[in-house]
Image (cartoon, rainbow, N blue to C red; front, side):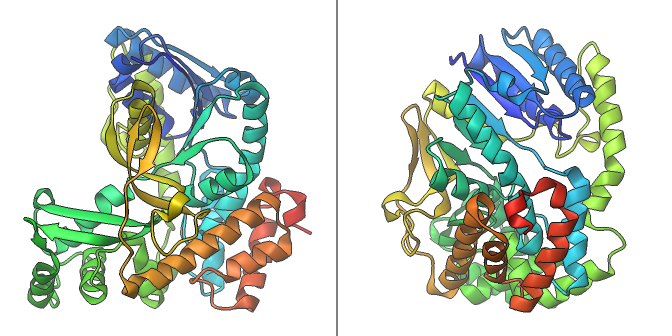
Length: 433
């Protein structure tokens, strides 16, 4: 079993308790390890640390857990760096969701202008993280969950030599939306998706070993007028039948944009505002559990559930313990493993992970019906990463205008200036001039 120093940047976040519970669930795989929680809020860090240590002690785990607000000190001699943080917290996300709506554009956490500005804020922090890693942890590997994971990985892999693997469970769970709509059993399906994060499509879709599409066609004919069908499931089933490929849920924003925009504009609260209403109870629960003899997280009072960031920990486990696993990872398209995308573009594909690294499986081309929009999103990703890492206001506006959700240069410019002003405290000066 691997004994490593794991530094968790974002360890005081609302997902920190669930992530540590997830890590300690597989704690026997990391006997003798040290975990350092790093964040800006010492009070919340201590809550997560105290709860985590009690879990470890109850399980009899030989794992040391500490916490610090000094990032560089915490990173010293790190083997693995788990990154999952949100600059500006949920208040910044609420601005990402609200401001675009004023301009007639969808506001969403990882898509469109909201995702763009989250990437600018996230990567502004990553420049310092990379400096610290180079200075005090030159052998460290980053396992990233900071959104947008594709743009973060794109920038770090292109502009630095620090190894980074970004994770998201989307490719594992997106097919289930379409299968639920068709009333099919996910256990009998084999659906392989690829693309860029949150924007993948299937190039293989089987059910009991045969083509899935005739079953989806039949389900659509039977259910297209069914008023009981969930709206997202309806959209994904219709999209799969039309495009002949199973989509990621996030494609609803691109193919059903006008109606979703109306829904968002008419909603009383954005998603972030809803989460912020729940946060005080989350932290009350975490505090209670940090003093409990045997901490027991309630999934209804925990951000994201009782186990979080499991995929990142699965990748880490397979990598450090050399226990091969097939898992989805975001990494550069080296060797053109996903046809139709440049080699230095980060793609999300299924990989074999073991002690020698992360190895993408050979991919088939995406269907022509969906390849174009995915390539457009990959180009936007590339431009966004460049603007965030080295660009100016002009570069950022060009990147934002390349996003399919932004209807023109004038809107991109007006949106950029308003959102940049709102987030100025989290952006470098070069993006504000």
